[in-house]
Length: 267
Image (tube, rainbow, N blue to C red; front, side, top):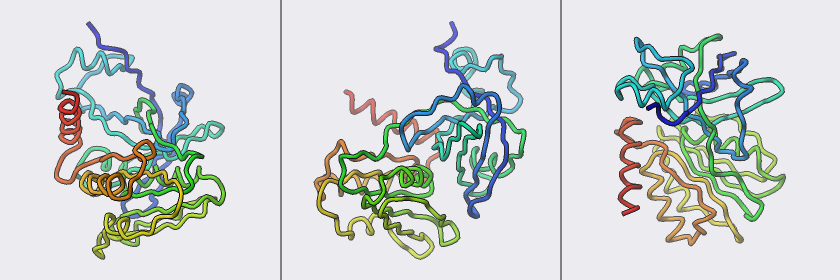
């Protein structure tokens, strides 16, 4: 029997923008965007699906049916990406892709994408948005978290204090981030040996209640989880924290590892 229906939204690339040497923005739209329903989260993410060349997929494309009828190696490759911007009136949805050469799936695709190319997505999901309960906000992440941090800074109330620590390769990867908040944005360069964990550890916390968003490579995420919860005494319900990827692991390997950890925790 076919699996549970998992509809896929078919978009078309409208244009691409090279934001930095390693960050590419794909702006997509088309008739398929009418079925996209945004949510209230600033870390809203979609699953981007990349079809395996040479495999014939039945129409309409349905992931549940594919997984029920085809061997795993023929399933579309899936990657999670933050919705950087959604403009209903313009009929545009923007996703920022990190590109580091020919390795991987999504980055090389984005580097060669051109107007008219198909972009397959499902979702969105999400879990975080800046709340009014917090007196100030903390953001910490690398390039993979940058789109969500940028969207969150844009959503902050005017004048609310915020600190953002963003680790990128070097100065060429910095972006101009818009916000009405009283935000202190600090760029940390791996090329200069700057450490994200050290920067957060050394900062002087403001008085009052803090809400934090910490996402990116699993190693620094794990260290900052302990620091913020155990050493800083943060409220767990005001901490959004997750490893988007792990150094040395493919996306599939990292997803399997996280699933195993969740299963072990349920036992």
